[in-house]
Length: 126
Image (cartoon, rainbow, N blue to C red; front, side, top):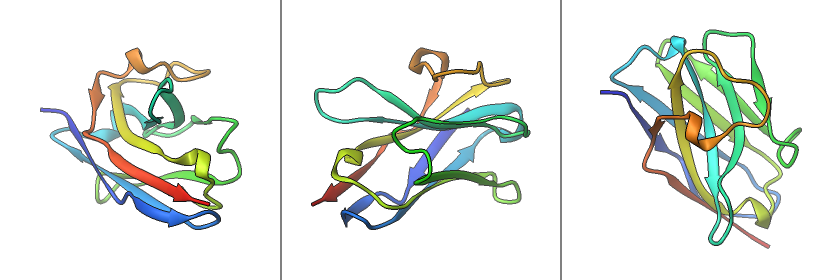
């Protein structure tokens, strides 16, 4: 059973950093497009960053470019999201997502990802 499992959320002051982890459980993640969506209360889900784990494609939302970095550890079957220079507007529930095959390109669409983790809360205070 394909199940992304997130960890690493928490509370931090503006300007701080957090690193989210997503362990790929039940599948070989190299054949998947994986990434992170976030959703704040009352807001639409936003694709923050996605990557084709096999290599060759990475996407970042404009709102996080230069501050967030998506990376992977193939030995651990784990995806990471390093978040630096955090802002209060980054406060949201962050979900790790996965779909088999290549990333579709462009702005990620939530419905294109069939596998979602339970989410981890990130709270940034001013």
